[in-house]
Image 1 (cartoon, helix red, strand yellow):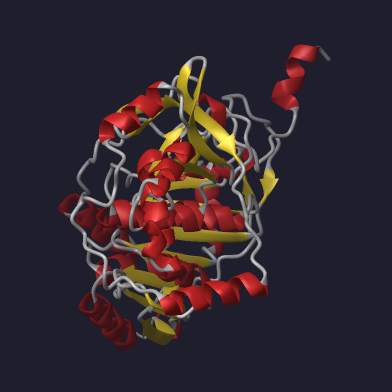
Image 2: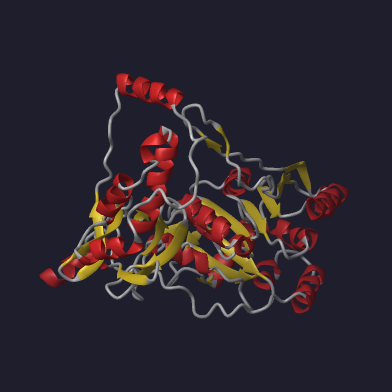
Length: 444
């Protein structure tokens, strides 16, 4: 074995960022969330300047970076956050000081700071770091010592974000990706909050060695979350109507390896349901629905790259119900033998997240594809479509244990004498219809 083959065959450390991987960059403690693909040429714009992301390659996830000046100009450098341990005596002393002073006498007239912008520019030209500029601003503030400890920390944090911004290297996984999209582009994921996503996976009983059928119209977030939970054991099929698959660009951000990517497959609904029933009536209805409600092509482009070679091992991997052949990349069309096995055995669970489609129209076509006693979960932003779907499921006697859940999440700020819910937070998380499919004895 040649030494040149060793790096490619060595196992990749998932805790360390590598060249070509997707990362989530948290700027100034959540003020900005940016997805990026690491490469020596990639840059990150902070303020009016762009900084190379090359120093992030090879660093463990969770590393903190700050802008520093060097021989080649300003760049991102890894820093270690300082933790000052406060004793009980120091805390009591701060409480006493806070009781003796308040902010009532402070007047915000922009005259308390004696350091001008020209002085700050001069410090930067001389190579002063961001932390040094912040300390100079504090030292030249006439009102800093008169403020309470809480106000001082607030002032320090505000100046640190402006003059010494920090970048946290985060690993993209289900929770971080969902939170970032919900904060940045909530409409692209159907306003699906992280607590609703976790309930979807729980109600559908997504576990290892499962064959999960998903109808994902939220950018591939559901598909990626299911594949992450399967961990390379089981399979996930992303069904779609018509000839254009639903976009699933979010899947590439999970940095899945070849084994997990091989378990992510796509299949049109007509292929899955063509031989599911004995007569051709159901197939004709599905084809008619495909022509009437074919999704709009969102210019997804070619399937996302997942940093995997084209020549994979030819050995098959065992699924709980069938043998699943490896696909070339995540999101490839499912092989005919795999589709045949899904038809014979049925999927172990079903998840639907299509806020822009009719819930009942999808359920009546997708639910027959899952096995008897299999759980299902349906997400929608509004209550009425799920209520209508639940009523028709009861009339058709297709499922039992039907319930509509409304996720509720409240975040709290926990600080000494300042514990309260966050002032700006989303109080609405959509609705989830869950149940268990039953066998229709009348049609057997």
